[in-house]
Length: 400
Image 1: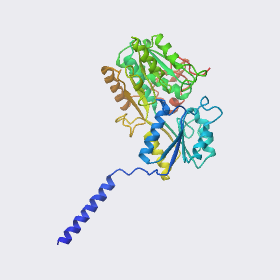
Image 2: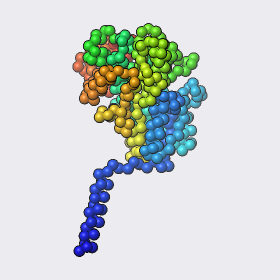
Image 3: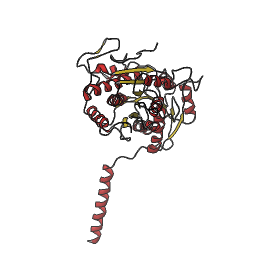
Image 4: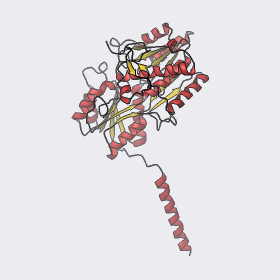
């Protein structure tokens, strides 16, 4: 009888263990021995775009046990005479089985590399080559396009700027001009206009939104406009909030200097969750990319053999846009944001989570042509390939 009871107890314990195992999350894919490479357009510690990718690489190492190797400053100014696909070959020579190209500027090079190296997996961050509904679709079984839906982050940034501005003049420090940068600047404008009119009850005609482009993602002396000078020009012209679209923090730095001299000026940097650290006293917040979760998922598929070419334009995790294990895009409120404005920003984020769509007509393009008729909702393609800035925005729509 005692022996039978012991057997029953053992069976119950084994059954319980099996049930717990079935209900528990699956263990992460083991990446031991797997090496992935990243090509970064700027310095790995730029407090912006490239650092966000670098830290995502560290996240992958932590979660999967894979090894990251990288080459930063992949641009013609820092590495004249070399191309990203050549540098990708160097990463492969060091053992990389997957290469991440981290800039729209590397789109053509990533295509060349993927075609020349069909056995190497490729992640193109911000490209559209394998988007079946995109303009440049090509079949490349070894490529994944991956981008966070920063249109939301920029809308939140624009709303934050409008709720804070005392002059109604918002300056947008832009990089180079392309589809991506137009849609992000336009998203910031739409967020600013919505919160200016709907939350503050002000006339849209009293809101000024100016975009000044420097010519690249960061300053290249002698090649681009100086972002420090652009920021100073905004401040001197009465623009009291500077939203950055570049990879570095000149806008924040100049706002900090102006505030130290007694001016009421604020800034919203970009890309990296820690950007506010350089000027907490004037930082209203930062929209940031969180590449880690998508990198883990995609690199896991390369490791376990489930890889499939696909296009990802990943939204925030709306239950908590700052959950770093789940969200693709987040927004951290800065110390300079007032409590009242902060509450309204939270309200705006909640509206977006509940389905608020600002990409709805009537919307016109900068040249006066109709972009979206009244009530028409923009498609992903119309947003991704925005051909001009929107009506009501000041600044160039195309390179001259």
